[in-house]
Length: 291
Image (cartoon, rainbow, N blue to C red; front, side):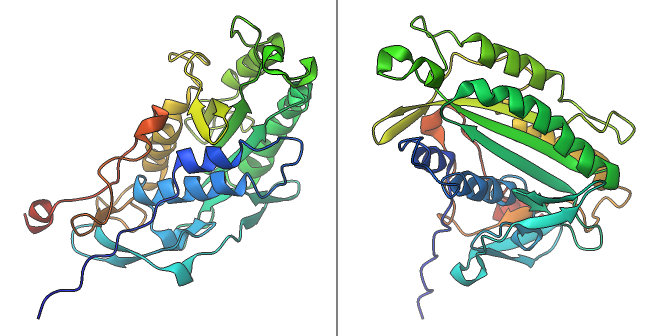
């Protein structure tokens, strides 16, 4: 009897998530940013190796334990849930946009996602909110790996925007408010050990996106590639700090990030190549699994 064809695993990409932010920023609701939350959840599973059962909001995926820390991964529409995780911080409850909860440990990793498409003068408020949220979580969970991801829409007065809603000048240079915000975030990233300042995030990413009708691109001119908060470094930094804190002492401990054993064609070899920030799935070949 012929085997049933493999079902491809659907993946929420960054390109799709950014496209949802490219409507009229004045009419957007909080639901638009949910697409970015879903993308982060998908990426933490497929690239990061966190079982979907650990992740909130829950992607439409299920995993099954296999040998040598290799797990099966399959699509399950019934498993999907948009529910976010609420945790009690040191001062108040906090809804985490994206969270990873390994069994027996509790909240171990999370991402706070913000988006600004207009009124960039309000970035000053973000400078006040970001370290406060971080302290609140780290007071209760000193080992929590916290990421802060902020998406900023590229726009110029020359494109028909009001001065208050523009983020770049006619020479495509960021306005001072964007530069000040970038510099403030650089001072808040890079927390490595649990004794480091609780007001610093383990990883911060700043991403500028530009809309062209139905098409979207990541603006390559800012921040610079050597910036500590360049988006290309954001997820890898989260994985590295998680491994540092939770991947010991057992070399095959239950807290380890998993490798996915999936059939040929179930996952693309590369994701989000059109954005200029491609990423890959954390998979093992059949040869590796049988070795």
